Image (cartoon, rainbow, N blue to C red; front, side, top):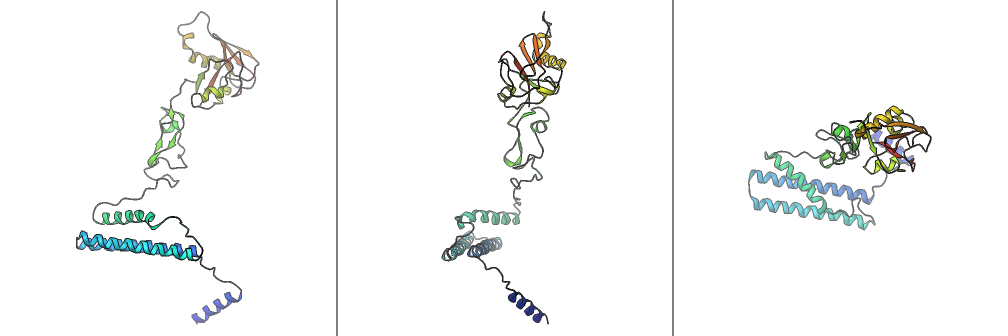
Length: 286
């Protein structure tokens, strides 16, 4: 009854015009090489079995040589059949010799472990996912930054994923300027220079705090606080003329220095690339 049902199904498929897709020469080559690799491993493990029972280095070497010869022959045979069919194997131009070290390492690892030498687990580093023992993987930093990776000691710069999938903080560094009001501030004494260039010169990027804290979106009091931190010699001991802030409408340069002790805060919306030939900018960078 089951056989009859199967025949009816097959007949129905044939009548409807359905047919299994023909196997390509490339697929045949792939299958043949998989089989050859499996037989090679089995051959090696058989040699390991024999040497474990009867230690004889000469016979072991002869057995391994036969395994290698069989692998080379079967591998080349799969390539030749694909070539005869006018095709190339999917893995061309790799040869048996390219796969052999990989297969040998697997076989040796298993044989060594079985002999009590310990099993070496394959590394998961590079698979794009953070596994146990890794702090990152290629393509993902796990949400880490210089700040988190250095516990805040070197919060600026760029963190990367290094060898062994361990965070590389060599590109991280502390604030090269002055930390105040929650940002890293730099002063460029060159009048007309932009904050973009000032920050870039220290490997940093423009921080919007330039505008929101001491610039057009901040306050004159904050501008004075930042400047006081940058130029402590104007506050301790007090100079005859203490620093003060005056307002202006310029090109969006934010908190600036005209000539100390005169600070100028531009009320025009602060921009990263703005410059004024008469003013030296105070910039927040990150």
